[in-house]
Length: 474
Image (cartoon, rainbow, N blue to C red; front, side, top):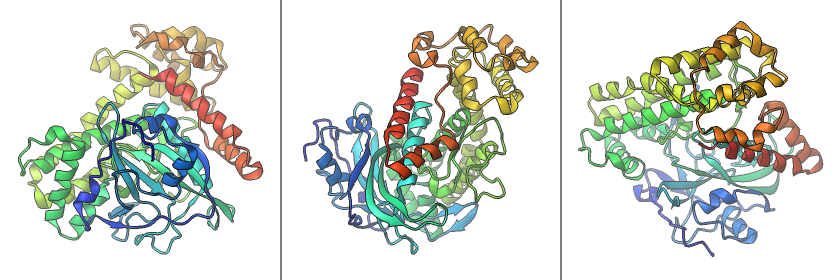
């Protein structure tokens, strides 16, 4: 397979041995129709030179990549699902396919699947993914990346020619296999499994593995201090991720501990939503009847999940440093939210007190817009602060921006400088409306595919999202 010179295989997870994963085989799919390949992501791992035919050999048949894992591995883990512990988990319709080093950064990255067939952890499921689910994940990952949220990247989507029966969408429905590129699939639930099985030896091995491969700056810590040092790093990364979700108006929908990874990068997008407007009680999943994972509860949920991770480390660490690490979440989240909101507004930071005041006033202003002000248009209109005031006051929301709450927000912009004001010259800001990814539009994009096999609206949407990414890049 003609990989590029920048391809650097480094299959590390398999070195942990059989207590952490199970070797599996991919399903034999009746059709292999390439629907999406992420060329830009492929360049970062040296796989951009593959032809489409070679791509399908790798990401539809899952023939091993050169000098990489000899076979796929279904990872073992447990997890709290809606805060109920479930020891009957693991990769049930996916596997870790390969690990590679990223060009430029040297980060260890995973190629892992969704919908690649049954594994020992499928729990009587068919191990498949609907094509609609794959389309939705491609869109989610692209939009989150454009908004600077740490996220896995959809790498490949292949339609597989099977008719699937599902109880939550019209059936039979089309099938697909998705491959994602992510910075680790080691989950909080990976630690939970070994804590549940009372294996402190495996917990210590996992701590060492994570530090060596994902937090090498902690390698100098002595053995006794390593678990708490790792928890501090995961707390900080998780606070950063949560703040970016909140600034993006993103509702993950299923914040179970098996969906939280140790590098602070979100992945596995099922019933997600982007906020139509500011509503802390907004939920993404129809089955979240109590609002446990509502938009406004995401920071609380992340902290609860981190507490479960800390509990897994108690067999190999004293409690006091773990508690101290957990106590770092609140200030880390506060600082990260300030930075994330300033980034979304395209403004330079000043003093902590002034930044907090501006961000709080911005949230009040968004709320004041009520049903007439959607989340994304607010940040589009005011990107760069007063440098965009004329543009904002010429738009369709000009009357809203004259309210008392908006006057207070605009007054606080007076002393603010835009960060990289040249970005406002991008053609994206010449449009009347921003690019959004709301539920109804996703349904419309899917209808074009489902009803007419028309992929042009989907491709056009990805192109528009890419324009956002380029316009907002910091």
